[in-house]
Image (tube, rainbow, N blue to C red; front, side, top):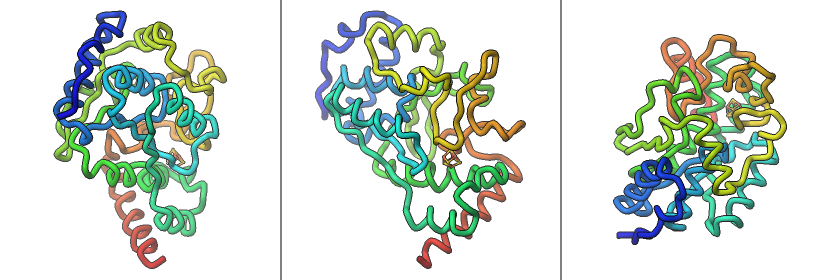
Amino acid sequence: MPQRNVGYTEKLIDKVDIAAAELLADAHQRYGAAFAIVTSFQSEGMVLVDMAARISREIRVLTIDTGRLPQATLEMIGLVERRYGIGVEVVRPDGREVEAMTASLGQELFRDGVAQRMLCCHVRKVRPLELALRNVRAWAAGLRREQAESRREIPISEESDGKLKLYPLADWSREQVEDYTQRHDVPRHPLYARGYATIGCEPCTRAIRAGEDHRAGRWWWEADAQKECGIHFSADGRAERTVDVLLRQVLSAGDER
Ligand code: SF4
């Protein structure tokens, strides 16, 4: 059973932090190496990493290198490792699956439709993460209800696919995240300073303009789609069926390589 650092709450200056930190500490105590934080180094994920490092440096931190990340995100890996004295586990997609997908549908397939975009997210993010989490019994991510319509109902914790999924910041406001970041001098992803509101793959994320919705910088060519990648929410209806068909084709082509 991993040891909990009993003084960790004293290192958190404000009480609002404690509920989220307790959740991480309890998961660490209960599951040890079978618990992980998954982050793409956005502000919310960085709050979780900062909290986790105060609890124990043994808490695993995972990130997904989709192969299409901006250089600034790749640089965050080293920065986080140096700042917190931890090793970040980098999860990558299966090269044969990526090759099979791009060979048949092109490198920029995500511009051809919602199903193609979800397929790309599936191959580059969802499948590799599922594989990386196969021995994990609980994991945490930094989603907040305020971030998007599709996130309005996310719980603090839920059972999903036999795993405990934690969203310790589900009820936090953007201001709370900013406040924590400032108080603890948490490293910031450099793209925020260039007008980005969320950070994702380079071709699918842009800076937003004044007055635009927080998620407007993601897959902006998809006017009506739910802008989620499938890690936390699955596609519905026709898109899901099309993704399934395309995925089966890609996987069988990948097996032949
Ligand atoms: S965000 Fe874009 S490039 Fe990244 S996995 Fe999804 S569709 Fe592919």
